[in-house]
Length: 90
Image (cartoon, rainbow, N blue to C red; front, side, top):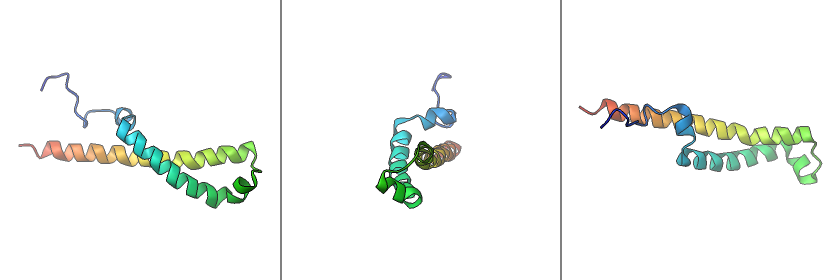
């Protein structure tokens, strides 16, 4: 291994968060959970198509929150797993 090799442990939060696997999983979680929450919180307005721009912003946030939580937990799990894998190598 050379000095230029970067392991997952040393990667920044954003490098891992932008990885294809993390992004795809976070999108899936956001679509599933965000849709459920949007209909729970704004279902009547969505079905009537009577929501304002403020309601639209709230619905957008309803999708962004699960995306962020999923990304945060995935990056934490990846870093923890790679830290444990590296510390066990003797």
